[in-house]
Image 1: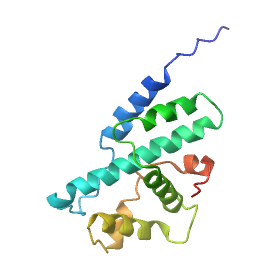
Image 2 (image 1 turned 120 degrees about the vertical axis):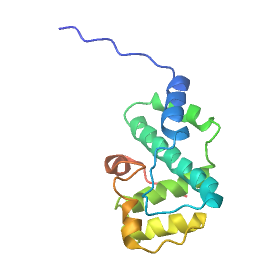
Image 3 (image 1 turned 180 degrees about the vertical axis):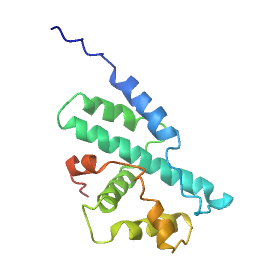
Length: 152
């Protein structure tokens, strides 16, 4: 039985699709109990975009381990308008390890509190902080387990 031929997509085209669908579009819905003041909305949007970018970058890095062609997708993604600085991306990637249980030093609630404090929201209610976890909005556990460890 003949198999269907694979669809060929240019690296730049795939990077643009990923960028448009998974980075530019706000994919994170914060819990209703978490009130974000209008003055902090831009900071929240920037931080959310960083984590969405890091999530896509993480998935592309995982695919690079088995398909070298994804190296070119990663290069094209880095050229996109909202691409973060390497240090920001490294920091977000390390946070994924904390969020998803690879590094249990701080845990999810501590990370959520720090994340919100960074943009100026002093949330201490563990019930609200815990809502940021369900479902984890940025990356899947399987991706982080396979991701090459972040190094400085």
